[in-house]
Image 1: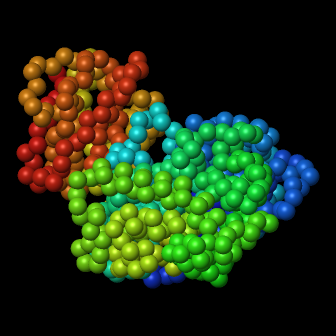
Image 2: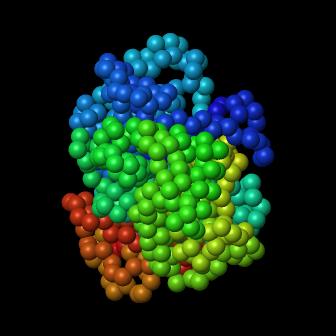
Length: 558
């Protein structure tokens, strides 16, 4: 059995694997394989390229930046420069190449997302538990069901490959599962701000930790142009949306007198060259020192050579200026996120009971971005103190995948599953008799409180399978405040069921409804949607801390 954790970034994909054949145990090191999130097609056969060529190769179609488009309405839109392939189809090709282990045959992708040819013995494939990470939901609760999501796109793609993910977890949660095991001081913190600045996006999350449980209470994610301040995600010339890193390298090219448009092959080539340059430890350390000097005394050090990549020679001043939009957007997003919470504890960084700031992602290593974020929080950019966590080089990019692998191996639990079962009391006619019974809405641990999507009650073997069960809600007499819109029971393990209390403003109109359950940071909610369509109605369950008392109230539907 292999235990895998996948962090599919816009620029790089990180696949962590718990040592195969070894029993899962705490303290085990976890290796990470890092590859470019790219696919090269030759004669309709896709493969992960080893690097980026200096000039275009005849007959080869190169696809970069596709992970950033998952979970958006562009994920199913054909991209002309990819010969009409969609981001979803390219992702499927990439994951097939990444997850097919050596020695199990060669899987060739036709580029259309459906036709494949497998050569070799597939029976040798070792089974694997896969946990995939996705960006946190923007806001304090998951969005509407009709909104596209990265989670749904990835699950559909992996299921089509015959490798469905056992679990999906928010990226900041996965990172903290790993980092808190490595750092006792971080493990003691109750409030943690995670800022991940990568090649495709700026992800900022407010996380709380209680014991081993880690939850995202709020987040903001800026992708591509929105992270650069140029507007919402949109397709450039050629039909591909530029990655955040492309805006940065095209600004550096312009400062060097070279015109490059974001979204073209030239900008991708520069992006990949920049990525290789800052991946070198010595180059990155030298760059950090040069930029610190230039920021302190630009008149003396601004003209100092800072970085060479892709044929460009960039000075310290040019890099400081080019990073300004990224730094500005990062600070604005962090201020907006913190401003949504009237809790001064999020702004008190330090050891003990103070909050922590964790900086992740390759672009967070750039001094102008890091310094702007720290200064906006009232911290000294050069001596931020113990409240700021900058992981070591291998964890800067690999912490998310390693945390997912821990979860796959059963060595961590983020506490993101609702522990109780939920059931619905109904009455229906069986052989001309009215019979009362209970239908299972959710099994214990099946409701994801972090990445909740609505699962509707069906007549299959479980929620989400088979055709939908329809319930009729009839006109009710006057309902006392706090009574249930429908009779749902909470079933704690080994205890008697408790009628659920709800937070709701008005009862549903009489009619025929589908019944579903969805999770969120505040707990589960019952979802009712009319069978003839319309906007789903959400009824969050009230706090269940008093389950032992059993005095919450519910009302059956007459």
